[in-house]
Image (tube, rainbow, N blue to C red; front, top):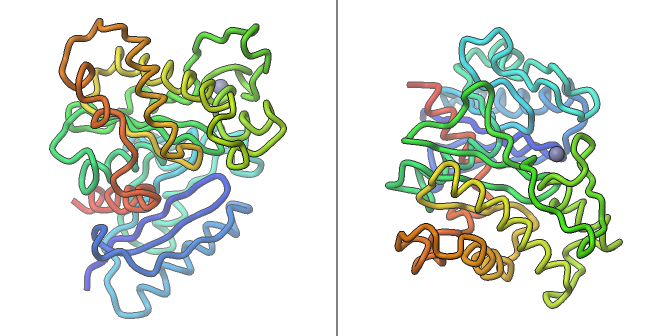
Length: 296
Ligand code: ZN
């Protein structure tokens, strides 16, 4: 059988799987992100087991934490570039995998991978311009624009959008090492924990943390709606509990204030700002979508 391999390369864990879509996903393996050598070594060992088992590995896709270089033809294509994660700056992920497995390797940001997976199999099917935010240990945003993943000079970095911060209402300075109170600095999981001295999952639904969180996420989402004109906005990641969605939609409606008079925003926000259709498999399935793209 011909299989595609996917690696969801996160800053805290790697998830590997093979298959050619949600129905055939198998052999999912998770392990912590340690040094590049050890972590990529475990991923390579996993795919070699698949190859040794008699299945043909057509290609591998990597949806990686970043910043990364996703531009084919660039001398540093396939590298994790300037990440603050210790040991990982300037890691040639694609080069290592290609040399070890001898297959084409697709490569992009974790969130560009996720938006591609959602476009192929999830809640973005049939649309051509879609944004995917992940809200967890960090915040990232990927975009499919006119049917293509958005790269430009590098790739979008929507997690670091600068948004209004009312320091009287929220004196917390933010935790981004580069910007302090950018979106990630104010609204990522570690920001919630640092502000309230308590992990997000232990805060009750009526805690003021959640209205503040919804406000910050809505500010980020509105800026992206106004910039890219997406047909749908997907919000995934560990922080995105179900009760946040109605609050984010309410804030987005209030912030837009009726200016964009399209039914998706005036009547259909329940279907416009949505969780990933692929659930927590969006990342690894996105990586498999990147592998399929690399094989064509
Ligand atoms: Zn930042």
